[in-house]
Amino acid sequence: MGNPKAFLTVPRREAGYRPVLDRIADFGEVEQTLNAGERKLQASRCMDCGVPFCNWACPLGNRPPEFQDALFRGRWEEAYRILAETNDFPEFTGRVCPALCEKSCVLKLSLDAPVTIRENEAAIAEAAFREGYVRPRRYRRVGKRVAVVGSGPAGLAAANGLNRRGYETVVFEQLEYTGGLLRFGIPNFKLHKPVIDRRVRLMEEEGIEFRVNTEVDLTRLPEGFDAYCICTGTPRARDLALPGRELRGIHLAMEMLAQQNRILAGQAVAEAERISAQGRDVLVIGGGDTGSDCIGTSRRQGARSVTQIEIMPQPPVGYNPATPWPQWPLVLKTSSSHEEGCTRRWNLSTTRFLGEEGRVCGVEVEEVEWTPAPGGGRPAMHPTGRREILKADLVLLAMGFLKAELPPLPENAFVAGDAASGASLVVRCIASGRRAAAEIDRYLQTR
Image (tube, rainbow, N blue to C red; front, side):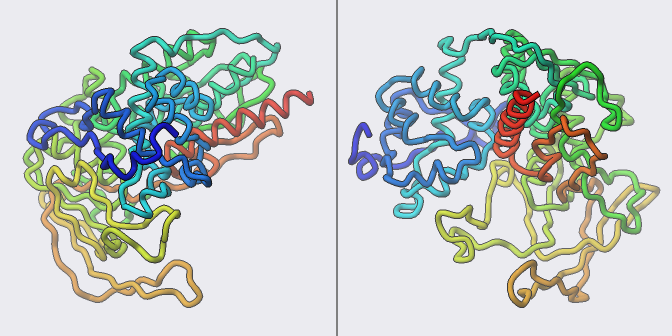
């Protein structure tokens, strides 16, 4: 603990975002950075608590007090080594993790000003690549091969863990690029794709083979492998089978987000197939992170207006007694995309889509009320009969994903990430991939 009183004298300072009018003109990353001196000051605020709830809350078991202390002392390489022991990809989580660690920080409880753990993590990772602390290593081979199906965060983490344990590792990806959700689901303004490319190149240099444009039939896994790790994610999004769903202009959120990322990667998309919000009134159905990504993408495409609706009630602002510290707080979240301009509404259920000349022009919604369920559990929804029409000529469905239904798998096949748990956080997928690599290693050591 470098400065035991820093939390009393150094206020929390976030790097913040680029100005709205600047950032909506491009798809560059919205988050700014602090200089090295400011970053060390922020790291000094860590109290090195006797019980580090930040470590308890992190799915990866990261050790913030240790890497914060190294950062405060200017030992950037040491800070990265501490991070890399528990986190394969701090450059990803430092950008897109909701920072469960910060919500359980003692300074969150006492001052509502937790240590900037996520930003510090991103700064450490970038310094490590910039200064050459991250270098490819070669690992002694044990003579066994493992196939990883899917190259999202879980697949990448599993492949990394297996390769480092000496297994010849081949990653199969059905799409044209590696990265899965990181590549196609997260907009560039949150995660610049060269960050993924940089890590994949390193993994290739360390001996991992990636085969893109290669679909794997899970009922007939490829031959020649001693074990398999299934990391196929949750490919099916929730849909709305309502009257008018066939109208043009209604799309699943991932259709738009993935297409935009492909366009930014230089792929050509025919004008007739392009999903564009330019000059349109956009309605986003779903209040989560995917919906927020649709808002930011629509703004950058030049939407006339953006409205986001959510069937659940508006969460409390600031504090929710139902989720006390150190739990993850279910409170109102305002993302960088929301700040760019969006009308938000809650307690609205969609009843039908309206169209003109085959294209959606509006959505009928009904206000609902929620009553607590006896004994806890999910509250009950009650329609009120109060209906209205929302104007929209582009509708994006961002209501989450359905857990994958996998066929029976052989005993040497292990499942990780969203394919195992249903849709979750990138940090949880990385943790799941790490666990799967360890399980496969234990399995193969007995064979």
